Amino acid sequence: MPEGHSIHRVARVHRRWLVGRHFTADSPQGRPEVARGLSGRVLLGVDAHGKHLFHTFEGDVRLHIHLGLFGRIRHFRGDAPVPSTACRLRLVSDGATLQLSGPSACELLSLEEEAALRARLGEDPLRAEASLDRAYARLTRGRVPLAQALLDQGRIAGVGNIVRAEALFVAGLPPLMPVCELEREAFDRLWGAMRALLQDGVRDGLIVTPGAPPRPSPGRKRAERFCVYSRAGLPCPRCGGKVTGQSLAARTLYFCATCQGVDRMHGPRRKRAVTLAP
DNA sequence: CAAAAATGCTGAC
DNA sequence: TCAGCCTTTTTGT
Image (cartoon, rainbow, N blue to C red; front, side, top):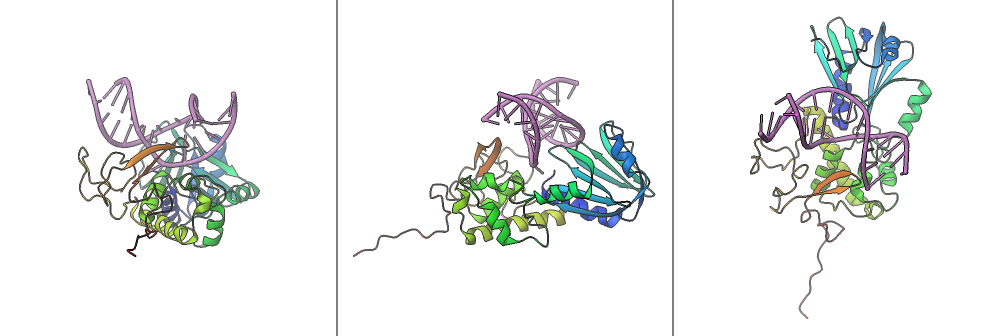
C-alpha cells in the first residue's frame, strides 16, 4: 500500500474528516503510552512528508506514523468494527474512528525530534514547496545507480519501488546509469513523471500508469495497472520485448532494456549517429 | 488450512 | 549484503 501518494491521501482524508474532533485513544497492542498521550485531545492538523505522517494535537502533542511495509490505516464513519488484536492505535470520536495496524513507527515526538526527522527527508514531489534545484543537487550526488538513489528518502522523499520503476519507464531512462551522469533535462522529465504518477495516485487512491496494458497479460486475471513493475518476463506494452526483473540492493528492479536504453546507458532519446555517404 | 508475497527500513556482520 | 521486523491479502492444496 504505502508509497508517498497513499500517505498524502490519508493526510487529506484526515484533514477533511478528523481535524477539529476530540478523540479518545487506546492501544489494544503495544503502545499504551502513545494512547495515553493522545487521549482526550483535539486533533489540530495533519501533514505528510514522503512516507511519513505527522498529526498535531492540542497541547503541542505530536504523533508520528510510518506504515513501513505492512502498516494500514482504516477509518470509519459511524459505527466501527471491533479492532483486530494487532491494532496498534485506535482513535475514537463522535462519528469517526481510526484504526492503525502494523506500522513501523507510531510514536510521540517533541518539536525538536520532529524537526530533526523532517530535516533528513529529501524533496517530496507532492509538496508545493518542493525545489527542483535542491532535488537535482541531492539526487545526483555520487556514483550509485540512478534506480538505487531514487529509493533513498534523503534524496527524494515518497518514491517507492512502484513509482521508481514506472517513472523511469515513462521517462525512458536507464535505471543503472551512475546518478551523477543524469543530465538536468532528463531529471526534469523524471521528476515530472514521478510527480504525475504520485498526484494521480493521491486523486484516485491507487496508481495506474498511462500506457499500462489495457487487457490482462497471458496468465493474469485482471487488467494491469503498471507498465513494468512486477511484470518480469511479460511483454513491454510499448515495444513488446520482455520486461527485466533483477535484484538491486536487495529490492527488485523492473525495467524494459529496449525502451530504457540500457545498453546505451544514456537513454533512448539521444540521436544515433548516422553514417553519411561521402 | 498453509504458504507466499507485498509499495520499507534498520541494524548487525 | 542479509536477516529480521510486522500484518494483511492472495494463492494453492
